[in-house]
Image 1 (cartoon, rainbow, N blue to C red):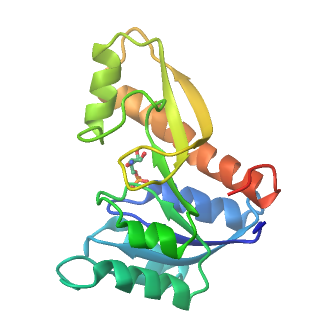
Image 2 (cartoon, rainbow, N blue to C red):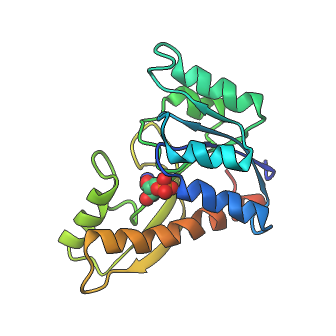
Length: 198
Ligand code: GRF
C-alpha cells in the first residue's frame, strides 16, 4: 500500500483547491509532497501559484503537444516522482493512459454530492444552478476516484453544505468552495494514514 503521497496536480483555472492543499502541506496538516503542477491553460492562475510556491510547473495541452499531450503529462509527472494525480478544476477529459500510468491513483473533486449532479455539462456554476432548481436542501463536495467517464468512480470523501433559502448559484458555490478546500486535504490525509486504500 502506498501511503507516501507525492502529488501531481492538473488544473485549468485559478487553483484555489491546489493552493489549499499546498498550504495544508506547509502547515503540517497534510502529510504529502506537492511535486508538480500542470495546466492545459497557459494563463491559468494555478501556474502563477506554482511559480510563487517554487513548485515545478508545465503548460501542456493539445496546442503544445498536438500528438502526445497525455504522454507529456505522464512523463512530466514521472520525472518528479509523482505517484498520485490530483485533479482540481481540470476541464479536460482524462485519457485512460494517464489513469493506467498511475495505477488508478487519480482523484478529482466535484462541487456537489455525487452521484447526483455529475456527468457531462455539470461543471462550474451549472452544478449549483441544477441543485437549486431541484430544490435540494443540501449540497456539498465530493472526492472521487477518476475513471474514463466524467464524475464516475468510487466516492472517497464527501462533505455537506446546507442550501439556504435565499441562496443563488453564486452564494452556494462560494460556500461549497470553502468545504472543497477542507475535504481534499481530509481525504488525502486518510490515504496517507492508510485509512483509505487507493
Ligand atoms: C472547483 O469548484 C472544483 O470543484 C471544480 O472547479 C473549481 C475549481 O476551483 N471542478 P479552483 O481552480 O480550485 O479555485
